[in-house]
Image 1 (cartoon, rainbow, N blue to C red):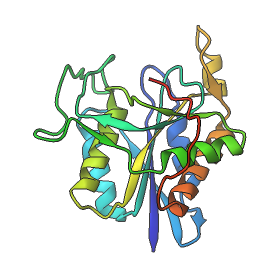
Image 2: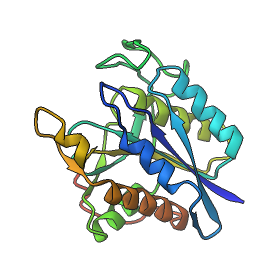
Image 3: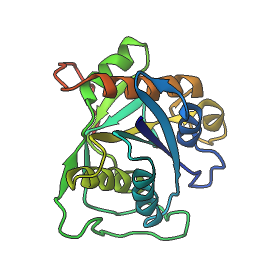
Amino acid sequence: MKRVLITGYEPFGGDDYNPSLEIAKELNGQTYGEYTYVYKPIPVNRFQCIEELHAAIAEFEPQIVICVGLAWNRQGISVERVAINVADFPIPDNAGYQAMNETIVEGGPNAYFSELPIKSIVGALREAGIPSQISNTAGTYCCNILMYTLLDAIHKGCSVKKGGFLHIPFETKQAAQKVEQVPFMDIQTMIEAVRIAAEVSIDTERDEMTIDSGEVS
């Protein structure tokens, strides 16, 4: 059995809801071709997020991993291009820990590039009417840690052949609770976006598509 592992984060930053986790749960058990989708909840914790990802890869032995996380002020689905070997937190994690200019993997490269067909994913999302762009920063919080850890594991020869990270905006009802206006998207559209990203990742061997990617820094 071939598997696509989809991860989502627990709530953080004062919220009691994180749409990334709900997306991963919703897709759990669904199939596409020879692949079955499985999910893993990830804690917003500097060290435990690494441990949980390694444990999930060992448990499921997936061929593809798509990590999903919530990001403030993203205008649509952000398909991340790169993860950097730095943990530097703007706010403490859920354990109260605030990393400052830390290295994620000692001796690791400064950065890894996504192993997903990022331009093909953006193209397919736009064709489906879902706002999307390539992002050139996954930040320096737990999302970047998870993406870097995943790509490091791929480069060291784990079962995963393709992997990367998607950032999503706030869910509609969640955004309504914010004092200031923030971009948002309904949960069903975001579920469909991650499903499309998984299907494109399964079907696309090489990312040869040329698009105006609408890249964000």
